[in-house]
Length: 225
Image 1 (cartoon, rainbow, N blue to C red):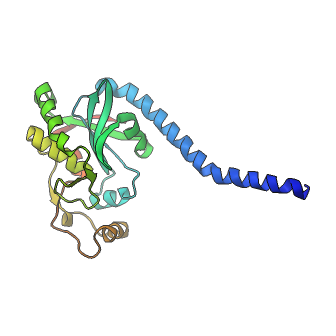
Image 2: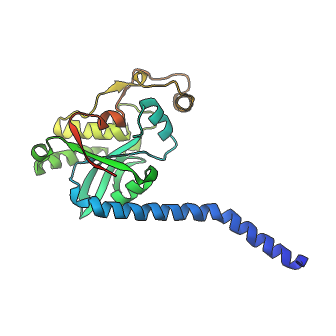
Image 3: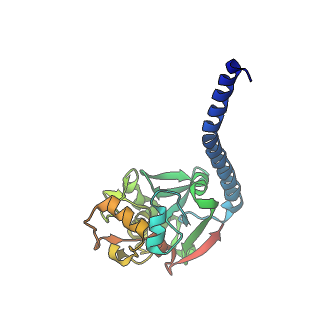
């Protein structure tokens, strides 16, 4: 190949190679979102306001949460229907409502589980649901809590569920624990703890984990996708 033709060819090849990972990620996001839309269309008739939803997050801290709690569940939220669309009330950055299709697409492999109060038919009346939503309203817009503190200044996902249900319906879902109760021995967990707290670990901080809520005897599994 002549030299004057070689340079454009190399530039084009280099640009294509550089762009491929970005295009591949976009394609994967599109495919996962389409799969989530299909899944939600199938399950929508089985969802109820106030259902809880769990998945394995793909966030940077997800592995540490899974290892420390011995569970695949690292993120969770509350399902509500608004204006005919299913949304997830969740603590990310910030606490907000997220379209259910987006929430499902964000999870690992599109896998999720929904749970519901065992006595939901009696307990989740329209008035009770209104109280549940009212309890969450003051937390809307709060920043995500990277340090898993128990104050309302910042909020993490399972803390949001626990406080909304406790304040709205006086129902305590899951067993409160302290940071020292979790398995902090794995190097990945220790690295995340050092990153967040340095050498001063708040071992006595009150914590509620996603799996603790997931395993609450007050809940029953509705969907496992």
